[in-house]
Image 1 (spheres, rainbow, N blue to C red):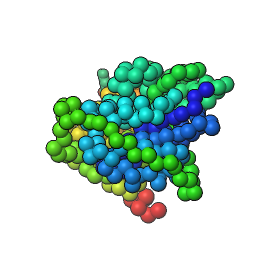
Image 2: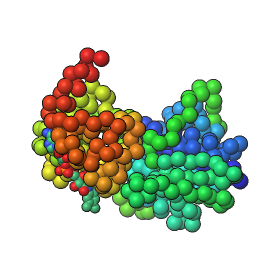
Image 3: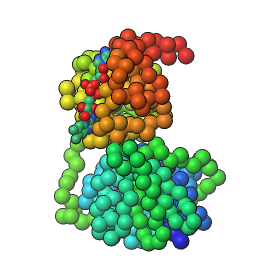
Image 4: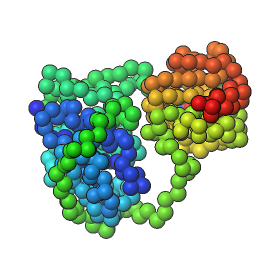
Length: 323
Ligand code: FAD
């Protein structure tokens, strides 16, 4: 039976990504009475210890090497491999984020671990850990049971609830000194330039307002940004809108873009192609605004509004401002 769970924390701009707390919840659930360790990298790692303890970590391994302040594959891979060697986990979790997707197959290959990626649920059934993950672009789900041996899983953000914070918890903290030779680093980050405006992170947003080719122009996205501001939402897009240069590809949702699972997804002028649905159909509530009553997006929508988005969206924004 698995005893030790290790979560590799995902930190962005010095802040923990919420999916790290979701990984802690998953690890706590399947480890039963085992130890849940979390590894957090970067100069400010110690500032994050308290929050990690409150959300389920029994042990926090900090690696405060400044070479880990920004993600680079070489540095993180070396650091995580040294943390894994030190902590000897049975199950490793990280978020299915840009970092998790880059580093997890490399770690799994180096250590010959099984890798279950993009999981939407993790359970313990009859002593086995059962991972659920979508297949066929989200049309079906497969359950994979792991009886024994080491395994690495990446969790899709916003699918597993984080534990309630327990401020009475405090974890054992351990600083690990890792070796990262300068000549092993093939990339050097000189400057980070964000392609999208500051605001809510699309992958972790609780509400997403997304625009498609029906938005018709870059300016046509303005009403969507106004609605998003009132709702505290992130703005996303279909590939149709990105290809038409109405917005940046950083906003693309779908099979070849970001996968989102918000509580509320508002699709504006999006037809609902299968490749788009692959990135958003697991949203908890879907609202579709489209002037074509036959649009496929209505087949996955909980609420459909047949109408012109340039009339409907400003109306919604005005109503919500009143609330
Ligand atoms: P359209 O299909 O052109 O739909 C526009 C919709 O807007 C229509 O339904 C129309 O009725 C409606 N509309 C127009 N004007 C208004 C108005 N004023 N008010 C309300 N509604 C209006 N697509 C993705 O989104 N994400 C992906 O990751 C992705 N990956 C792909 C990968 C591959 C390999 C391939 C082949 C395709 C991929 N696509 C992806 C593209 C996908 O097949 C569709 O072409 C794309 O999703 C269509 O975008 P759209 O819905 O914005 O545009």
